Image (tube, rainbow, N blue to C red):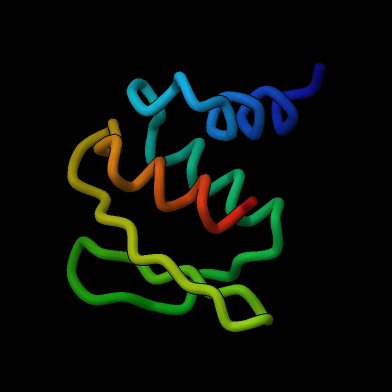
Amino acid sequence: MSKSEKAIAKILKDQSDHNVTFKEAVFVLQRKGFILDGGKGSHQVFRHPDGRKIVLPCHGNQLKPIYIRQIRKLLK
């Protein structure tokens, strides 16, 4: 299993709302076609060409579970 497959599986599992780093989330979003579209301060906006978007804060290393659930919802 490659690095990208592991990161995608980690986020898509309903059990893994914790222990996902900002770096892993960005990696998965970029693999799924999302593009960094600016941001303000410590928040980064990722947009997909079909109109979906998510704003992720980069405060520290770990993302809060709410952001992981939002990413999972966007990818399904």
